[in-house]
Amino acid sequence: MFKTKFDYKKLNQEFATFCLIGDLDKVKSIFNEHEYNPSIFNSFLNIVNIVTSFNPNHKNSQALANACLMGKTNIVEYLLEQEKFKKNLTNSAIQVSLQIAISSGSLEIVKMLLPLNKKSLGLYIAVELGYKKACYLGHLDTVKYLTLDKDLNFNQLEQTYGSQSKAPFKYSGFLNAGAGGQLEVIKFLSESPEMQNQFNFNMLNNPGVKVKMEVNSLEVMNYFIFNLKLKRNDPLIQGMIINPKIAKDVDLLFQKQELFKDLNVDFENNIEEKTAKKRPKL
Image (cartoon, rainbow, N blue to C red; front, side):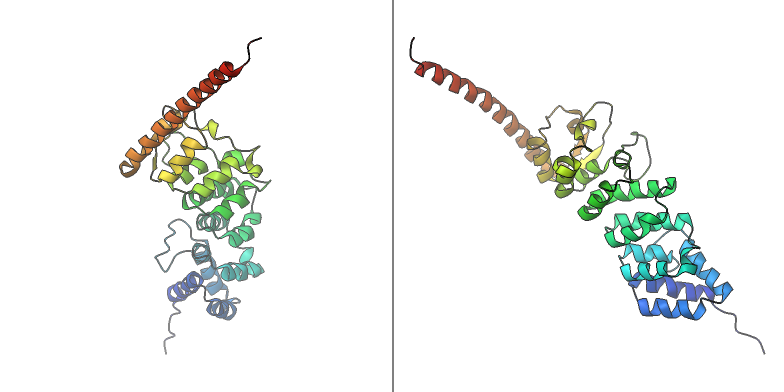
C-alpha cells in the first residue's frame, strides 16, 4: 500500500494565507500540529524566509511579510513569541517585513521588528525606504516614531539619492510627502518643535539637488509658497513637476505672493510717509 505524499506546498499556502488574513487560531493550529516535525517546520521557515519575490497577491508569499502588509499585529506577535521560529528568522526576512510594516503604517509591528537587528546596514536601508514610502502615504505616527528614534540617523533617512538613481522613493521623505500631498507630514518635518534641530528644508532648496517630483496638491503648494516662503525661481520649485490640473492655480499663488510682497513694501513706505507728515516741526 502506497503512502500518500505529504503536500508541503498546500500547507505552506494555507499558513501564509492565514497570516495574511489574520486568522490567529488557524495559524496556531498549524504551527502547534507541525512544530516538532523537522521537515514540515523547515518548510514553514522557508515560506517565512522567502523574500526575493514578495507578492501579496500570491499565496506562496512570505508569511511574516503578509501579516505586516495587512497590519495583523496579533499574528506577528504570536510568531515572534515562538522562540524556535524567531531564532531561525533570516536578516532578509526581518528587513523585508520591517520595510513593509513601515510602508503600511503598522506602527505596533514596526516597534516589534525594529529592535531585532537595529544596527544592521541592510535593516537600515529597509527602514529608509519604508520611511520614504510612509511619508508619501501619510503615515504620520510611523514617520514621527522613526524620526524621533535616537538610534536612527535622521539625516540618512532624509537623504536624497542622485538624479540617476533607480532606487524606489529615491528622494527625501519630505519631498515624497509633497508628492503624495501629505501636508501633515510636511508640517511635522518642517515646523514641529521636535524637528527644529534636525531638519532644514533649505538643504533641499539648492541647485545641487536635482529634484524631479510631481506635485498634485494645491494645498501643499500653498504651504510651500506662504509658510515656507519658497519663491518661483527657487531650485526646489524649479525642479518640481506641477500637475497641469493645478498649474494655473499655482501660478496665481505665486502672483499673490509677489503682490503681498509689493504691498508690504508700499505699506511700510506709506506708513513712514504718513508718520513723517504728522511729526511736529521742531
